[in-house]
Length: 453
Ligand SMILES: [Zn+2]
Image (tube, rainbow, N blue to C red; front, side):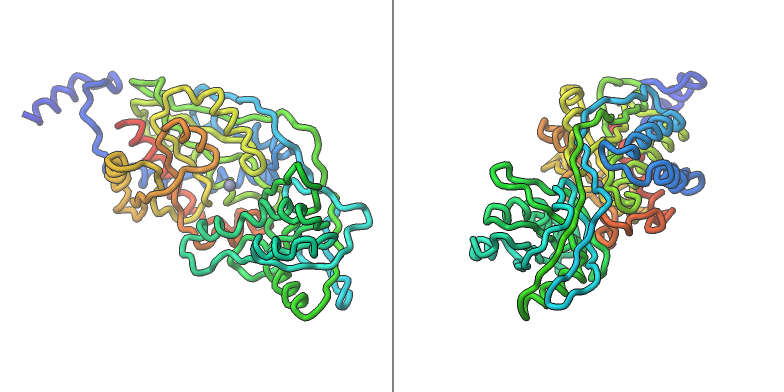
């Protein structure tokens, strides 16, 4: 019987597009088709080059971020998306300024140490902050020292734990000292804060990142030192008094009008139901933000382009969102959730873990739903990217998760991500063309499958 039904459906639909009565396209055939299309006709790397050339620095509120928004809108239109538009949002505007310097004053005056201001830091006075150094690894050590750190520069020197295979878990372990360090040290009267860079490498490249102050205590200058500099300072401090001079000229300007960029592949049957794919368009003002999150933006753009190019228009709408201000505020994510959070989202997928070889996805789904998604993702197993593991989505789609939307995150190989993250190393040379392309293919497949099921 079945073949008869198939033939009659095929006859009914010849030449008049897709209808509800179409036979379902087997998922593995679509995965295969997307892999072939992506590898033979991929544009991911070329698109990434366009982005990092148009706007290598895209920190919220900067001229680079404004150029990235313009590029994003034009790129979505060229990819054949519909309803391309900007969603306006006010974002913070922090600038690093011209001076970033850390000098050893004692034991012997030495050359500059590798340092970068943390995003959101206040400046030192023009002549700099000269003070004695105190080294701690944990908040508990700081609390024990208490008033002994008053007037000093505190270095938080806890490494990302190397024994953890998942580098994102290692980052999660160490990053609170970067985010909260200045607030914790200011509580005991410290004059400044340094943080060991968030990387498992021992090298001389400092990695920046976000931090926040406690409004109940003074805002003190905060910067990250390279892992080599951190180890050198800790070794010197173990022998005797160390004095440093830190100079930063950062400033925070009034909020600036910016935007999320949104475009769609309109669903053929249920256009009101949405599968969201997104990444963040902003990045730090060091390197080119090629992995973080240029790769995520390109994964989404190229996934949508492949689906349009392959004529794969699913039942639900696939909505592509380039979020603004993930790095230092999440204002774009909040604005999206405020305006669109009430619309029915069948799923949301974020790519913000770099452009390395994709292994599959993480998902916050539980029980039977997780098993169903696992079967869907397994169509990518022949291409070694068919894993679905328990995990979160991403910062930009988190507000949708709070409303019960199933969240997914693209899961690339994670060993090298923190070699580049938030540093001058994060440039397009660190991205491999085929690995980036395969991430876009995996994302195209899952977006299509979730919009089709
Ligand atoms: Zn990111």
